[in-house]
Image 1 (cartoon, rainbow, N blue to C red):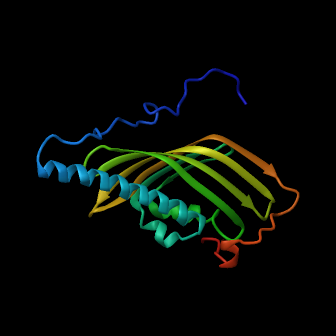
Image 2 (tube, rainbow, N blue to C red; image 1 turned 30 degrees about the horizontal axis):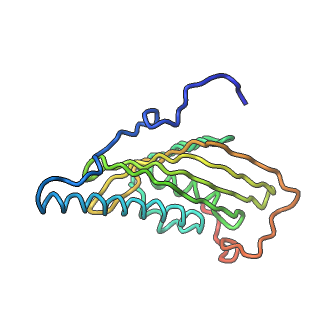
Image 3 (cartoon, rainbow, N blue to C red; image 1 turned 180 degrees about the vertical axis):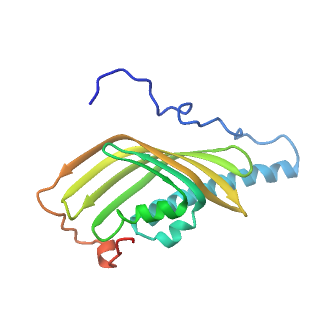
Length: 196
């Protein structure tokens, strides 16, 4: 690891996150109140999208996962030993299928959402990821955390992930003496195939 002093890159400014619309009640009448309530409902809808994302990747539910992405999604993930840059929903789904199948056990938890509404149809989200990935073929365990930075767009009344990025806060990889022997393994039990 480098000991050189660097400027932190996981700041709101460096990640391109702006304050967004204020979360204060409007002083106006009923229509302003409706807009305020809609903004809160949009924030909750965005949370549901990201929670479903984590559930779908860990269960290899790629068909449902596809519903949460914009066709032109941009993906950029920076880990300790890898960097993924993908463009478009089809490329992302094909790539992610390589790591979410019966040869893996994965656990991804997204915490502490910071959702900011940019407009009625645009928002940003910052999520704290904690994850574990066990690999069977080359017995290996990866544990880490990361900050996800997402951009969302509302299309035909539905929130979609338009851009998703993460950068690791830490990542620890450990070679295991033997493959894990779980008493339950969802992807193995349902024979989730390796994606083509």
